[in-house]
Image (tube, rainbow, N blue to C red; front, side):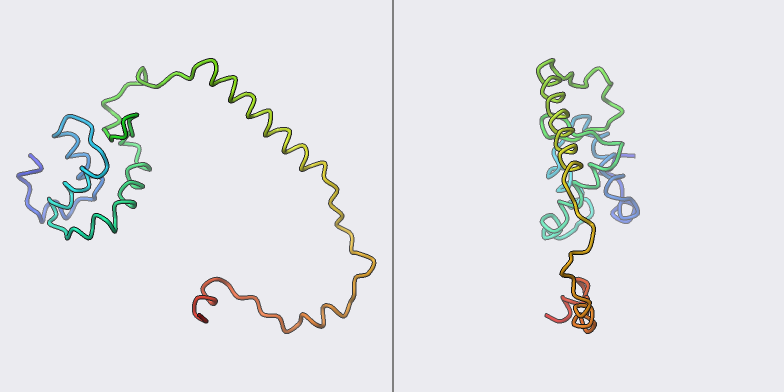
Length: 148
């Protein structure tokens, strides 16, 4: 059944990702995020404000769903239409850059491990400090928001 022939009530039972699958299957071509989402809003007869308020969530849902693939040109398509031979091969220069970057990261980790962290109490530690801090209250972010 064509998505255009489906009733609004039928479409409302589907998730945005399921509707996206139907749209991409029928269009037989890749589409950008905005065009797909505008089509969904049109089909579900949602207010225009939905586009601005939910487009980021929609993008995230596509990015985390393995049925979809984001192509180089910034458009989405169904992953099953693309074979592994379309995967971009990293050039030799890129591989060398990655190796150099990994070596740099390893050096940084070694430097951190070599730092002298003194876990012992300082000699001038004052036991009375605990007494001064006994009335200290720790608030989490929600409590802070409530106070403001």
